[in-house]
Amino acid sequence: MSNLTRELVRRGVLRALGAYVAIVWLLAQGLVDLLPAMGFPDWAIRVFLAVTVSATPLVGLIAWKYDLTTKGFLRDRQDVARDGQRPLDRAFGQTTRATPHGRSVVLATWTDDKGEVRAQEFDGRFLIGRDFKADIRLWDDRISRQHLEVYPVGSDWCIRDLSSLNGSYVDGNPIDVKKIDRNLEVSLDKAGPKVQLAVRVMADTLMTADSAHRTRTGQ
Image (cartoon, rainbow, N blue to C red; front, side):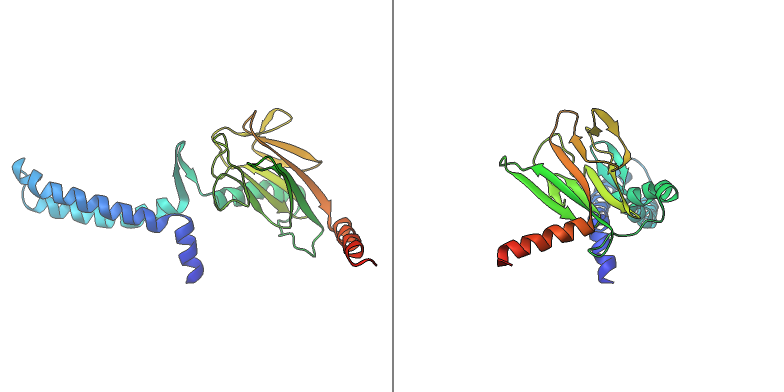
């Protein structure tokens, strides 16, 4: 139940239903006076309420499947990601979540809003965008709230543009879904901020971590 509640909140279903109820209530208040003045029978308002109440599940379903953005209704990012993985599954193998015991991780490098270069390793799916929930948050008006997704497909990694307003580019070319088959520099907007992505084999990462530990401990 707690997982369902979190998912309802994430997808904005509760917010959408609350807004729908408020709009219906305001319309009903206005129609109570307006319909009789226009000659409609008293039962017209009851029909209106019956129709709007019966449409509530449809509103919830639409809110579950779609996000309302400046580009219109866009499918939920996780649904898009799952659909995007299906053809890649056939090409690269079954989709699995990379873990610290898996075969690879992604090293992401970017410049934050203070001009400082930052780097972080990810062993599972992560998001890049302006949203405060994004794993890599970049403050730039050219970047969408949920701009780019990076996710594992078997032992490989892929990137997917999440229907961003200004697009994502690699080597100056717009991309939708692309496998990280080399060190990539992804531009968010053609002339916007850039994020470098590199796949690192976990064995190398563990060796590096072990070396760093030895240096710190003087071993």
